[in-house]
Length: 246
Image (cartoon, rainbow, N blue to C red):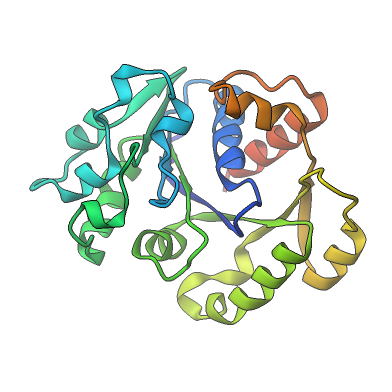
């Protein structure tokens, strides 16, 4: 096992399948790099992460990223205690009914401490960011991340989000030119991939629509294997890129 400790952000517009990408990239990394320790962190407090991943699990009902960030002493032990593990992947996020007003404001120093601690707890930390770059957690993740997967839905919503955020992300602190731009297909209508690629430029890949994934998530089976060879091959390619030797 390589001595790697990477922070990977998944950022993009609402509806660009950020959470799905984050979870399935984690699953793909676990396959391509046997023995890797992986954590997936759901940073979006408007869509609590834990009940999406473990909807029927009583074991995750008291686990909370918000509680962790509010604790008196933040340590690797405290982080591990708030995670729920499945197939060697740890999951950490907000829980059912929680929102940003449930906890004290998280300071920049606390977030920096969090990333320092979790970086050395696992090999790969994959953060499912919110879409608002101005929220403290998303902003700090994008600044801290070693790699950013920028998911953009292949529609007018994705295009307008991309244009609206670019002027913010061009600030030097975000290292925007290194982002890995990925178009995501939603399958609800015919999308014009080539037009989107021309409008955005430097698109590194396209994540195909997989019609079984929304059904899997609705049924509480997000962690099950995805029965779609094309989709899995794309996830495997992303995982290989993220785990390659520097």
